[in-house]
Image (cartoon, rainbow, N blue to C red):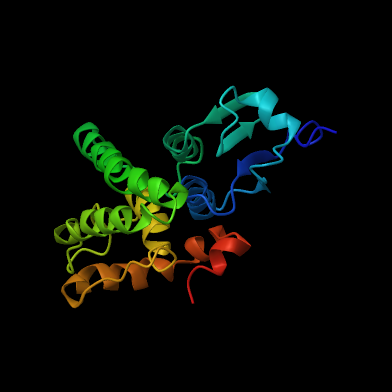
Length: 209
């Protein structure tokens, strides 16, 4: 039976309950207060709908009426434009380009190592954990105490992309040193946002004590 055939009036997000990429799209949905049917899938038993809708058979996948989108970055920007309030990207083209570049670097420097760590065998985990930790700590200067969010005074798609990685630090045995106080304060501030709490799957709720 199709999971979306009778739900065309409701946006549907195929999601993984423990994937950082799925998590950041859910944060955007929650920040926009968008009603969506979130379907958490089992990677080993993916629904026929997903196979038919997405040639890469990947999550997150968003269905909005006849539109099907995959890739977290594409989905996030679509949601920001489709539901413009509150805006999560700057209006100025230069600032938007800088925000996109920061998200690109987060994906390369944080998402790729974390995904590699998540899929690695025990032999290779220590090396990958060390590389991820060093990459995260190298970004400490970006967390400026006088600035509430990474890209300025307003919560943005940059924050939506950073939070799922920081949320999983303890899961992967990564502790922040005392010199990372500004990052620790950022974590406390952003984790307390209602949208972050509302975005969580049951699996993610158990990641942070």
